[in-house]
Length: 275
Figure 1 (cartoon, rainbow, N blue to C red):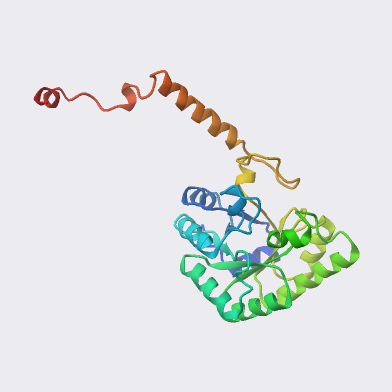
Figure 2 (cartoon, rainbow, N blue to C red; figure 1 turned 180 degrees about the horizontal axis):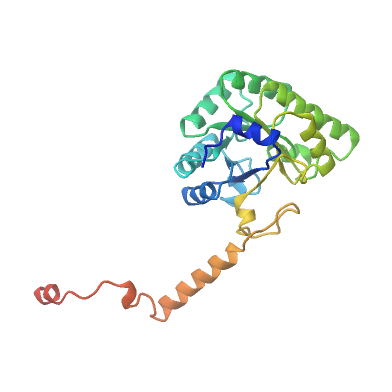
């Protein structure tokens, strides 16, 4: 299949072709997503919650993202690979931001995602895109600002908040982003943003009016241990499958049913006699 690029993602929007995106944190899942034809694979800071069981994304570091990016890179051939810029990694000045981006790109990322659209971040995004680095924007619910937002809540519900999100999307487009993630915003607002920018919008909890959709892979596969957000559709119950498999293994071992002859190496009489 043809390699996904920034150019082909723009073409998909212009042709009305929906974009698929999922997170990945390891090589086995990355290979499956790539083989299935997923367009964008994101090494998300969601790994803090989905992969490590933390209560937020705030504990994830650039080193963490770099480690998982190296693993995912080995499994991704066709998809466009994006790495998250974790909490505060884009706020320490332009030189610090550039060094963090350089690290993630060196570890295999083809682009980076930056949450928020403050004047400081817009300036950094503009400098990055001028340097030829693909940047994905992220507005609406920005998990790195969860404490400031007062929790994981739908954003843009009143007129002023909705207007601000539209303005942020336009500002991100002007700064040069190749796509914008819209998280947890009303579907009519997401559709308006999508029609008002020329770059693809990728929704998560933002309705069907976006140019594409993204989910956290552990949510999609049913690996989480809690109640998922309203916008999550579970396409499998791998938690149940894995639990049954592990219980079956434990029972077989305890009853002496594993390993059996089919899963053991045959006897070597000559060697045993020598011993």
